[in-house]
Image (cartoon, rainbow, N blue to C red; front, side):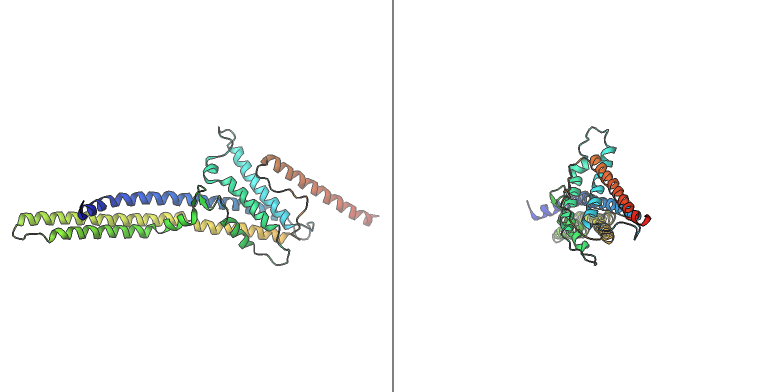
Length: 310
């Protein structure tokens, strides 16, 4: 096989190779985007419940001695149990009531459980101060080290794969130009053997050369088209934008809980987070504990007011 034959085969197969590479990039870009959006979904649900809780609070009229760890744990558990309990309730009539396909492929439920466990492990050792601790660093480290969320399908490293896909637009342009130059260099070799005395042969050589140049130029056109499409898709499905939103939402929700708290005491009787616990049972237990706490506070207020009435 001569060099010219290899060059011709390369030029012919180049557009198909770029098409395969484009499909590969779009598929994995979508998978990365969806995986990061699962982060953002849990952060959004957590922020929603924290804001709902803060709206019910009134400065000066609420009991003191609230532990930041206990409050954050209650909010995270409620977010976890409520989010997946609602999803389980919606798919209860489906044949597969154990785990949805997205949970199996993207490890959504496992990733959220790991997130709750890891963030609580770091929050319980925070020293209470009047200044807000570095919750942003804790949030970034927790999401970054989550083994279910920093790998696509739990196997492929997300950061390296995302960096590779990010260079595809420039790679398409360079590959198309390379195919054009290879086609031109192959055609120039035939021009050197032309005999100007033989017009018929010269015409055939020139026609073949122009055909090869035209076909080689198409590789540049295909490369530019794929490059533009890749730019548009990378902009629409931007995991970086979702990542910033995810971190901001989660960290701002923790800040609100810190402002509401009066200490960071770790109760000895506090039970660890159990992701395998039945969601309905956990939510019912949380509601019961909340009602008991309200009753205890009401009784304490009555006991305080009795001496004043007498």
